[in-house]
Amino acid sequence: GVSGFFFVCFNLVIGYLRHMETVVHEKTELLVDSESRSRAILESTPVGVITINQQGVIQLFNRAAEKIFGYSEKEALFQKVNLLMQSEDGKNHDVYIKKYLTTKISRLLGTTREFVGKHRDGHLVPIKIRAEKLESKGEIYFTAAIEDMTREKSLGSQLTAAQDLAKSIVESITDMLI
Image 1 (cartoon, one colour):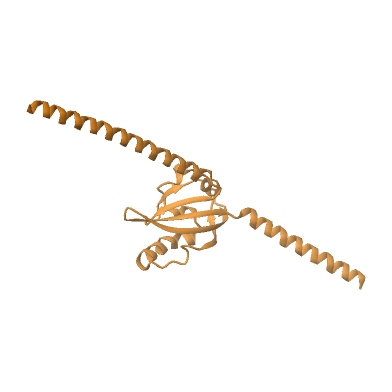
Image 2 (cartoon, helix red, strand yellow):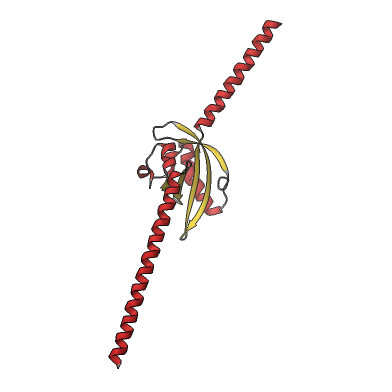
């Protein structure tokens, strides 16, 4: 009768709940695997990746960023990104963010530019940076891909010095022949 009907319904509900528990567990495992894979990719990239929120507070700081700026992820997270900038750029950065949030106009977003960053020990680091805006759950974030240009700048200086030396030698030889 009625109790048998409720028993069958109860067992169906229990079976459905167990099935849903299995589905949730499987989806959770897939999500954890995906997050682990994404984190591994982010940590293995040779490019520094930094994400800040609209207040300029660092939300993500990968291993390459640690090498460029000398701060560990733990030290950099939840600090103002101005920490990584020369004083003048750092002072203006908050103004740039506020201006962008108001006007939606930026000279930096979507372009690659050369700047000078500041290492933890205080020395300046030539960097190439490309910043993009992203939105998640109604919040605006800015993510930057950063390359350390120290080696390239050093090679450029060495090339210029070699060219100057070669020019000087040619001038000396020319003077000796005249």
